[in-house]
Each structure stands twice: as C-alpha cells, then as structure tokens.
Image (cartoon, rainbow, N blue to C red; front, side, top):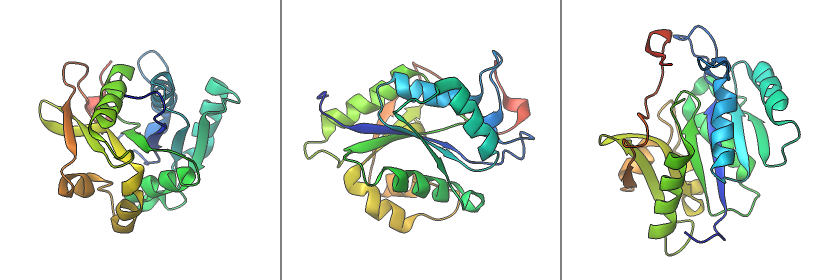
Length: 204
C-alpha cells in the first residue's frame, strides 16, 4: 500500500449500552482502560489520520475521558451524533459528515464494543484496500472472523455519498457492503472480533 494513501479512522461509540447497564463508550477493560480510549488508541497507533470518535449516550463523560487520555492530539476529532438514538446508521452518517471536507481516500470504521481490536487487524484491512483499489477511494473491505463478517471495515471515499443516502436504522453499512460485494479479509488468526453486547459476555 502506498504511503500516500490518506485513510481516516472512525470509532462508533454512541450507543446507550442498555444491556451493559451503561454507555459502551464508558465500559472499561479489566485493566481499567475505557473502551472509547482503547478504540481510539488502536486506530491512532495503526496510522489512521485523522480519527473521529462518534459519541452519543454519555458523550460528555466520554469526551472527558478522551481529553484526559490524548490531550490536544491534533489527529483526534470528537463528533457528537445528535440523533444517535435512531441507530448506528445515524452515528455512521455523523462520522462521515465530520470527515467529508477533508482530502481522504477512505475511512476505517470500527465499533467501540469490539475491545479485542488490534493494530494488526486494522493494518490488514488497510493493506487489502490499498492492494485492490486501482482507482483510489473505490475499495470496500470487511474483516471476517471464521468467515463471520465483522469490523473493522474500509469504506472508500467514492462510496460515501451512496452509502449515506441509503442509511437507516441500526444496521449501519452492513447491507451496503453486502450488496456491493465488499472484499472479505480473514482476521481470526489475529483476534476474535467479538462484539460485546452485555455484561455477561465481557471477556478479560
């Protein structure tokens, strides 16, 4: 992948986490690191720039955690999704809106409730996007785990307008990626890719 590629990162961290009993952005790892901080750190460490944190439920507290962890980090954008309660689609739309004025080839999108995320997984998806996209900005790549679609995903800039036009509810980009035959990249050798939806499923 060329070093000239301009890839942003996006962490969707707006959900209320009702089954968790608190906003997922505020949940902590066993070591005490908030999920929202960990997700942003992984994206930054992976070379994504800028990285946008899309917040909703608990946005004030989450923003304070990010400020404490990253200070005035110039690569970090904190964006509140005002309509976050309408589902993941509104969070994704808010994140794309925050990046739309920047010169970018695409964005790596992941979820706050996948705390197993590793920089190596992000880099594998990034590299796959760079390898298949001869026209820049036209790639769609999705990480899979034992053939199960998951995150992160790469969404090339050329797809942003069509994607946003069809976003609705809590499905995010799932239907769009499927309808456009996004390239699948197996990552189960790197991590589980598991979405953590309730306190019973939290892993150390």
